[in-house]
Length: 203
Image (cartoon, rainbow, N blue to C red; front, side, top):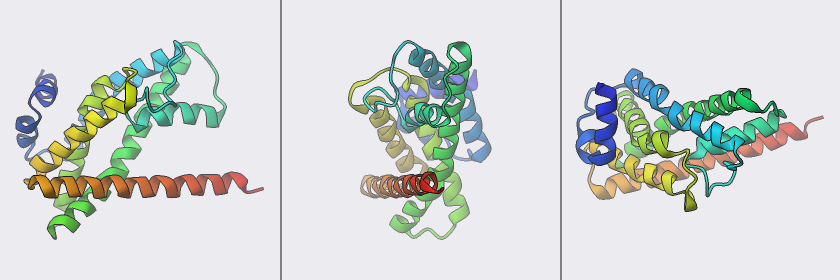
């Protein structure tokens, strides 16, 4: 019940709830993701069978939903039915895990650049908390087909609020850190895409 109460507070009172996350760490963040990420993972998988195209960013609530149909297509998987829902859900969860694993150190680096804080381990812990708990709107509502990536933008706004509160930053520093984080993750995404394309061209 405590987890559900926290999720409700994150949606209706993000600043207050993020302020209360002091002491949360990697384990709690992972549990939060593995508990609530399945909401969108499973429902998006079910709706994909009903014709919702989550490879279209205007439907997806986050990058994890974009990853799932790409992974199924790349692997040539076409099983249909409940098995496909489970596979889709699993790939969404893999997407969440990979994004968090990449995002936390990039965000920690961005905060370090903005603030000069030397304790990188502590900064990394706080970054993981901000990334994962800020993603709560995506976990709960990312399955809803939404125009203009609306749920993804909502989650990004909540992550910005989380960065501000978890790190006790000014609004300016929080926004700069989040922008650096988004650019950093985007660069890594593009580099990964180039690497995958190069590997596929190998004989």
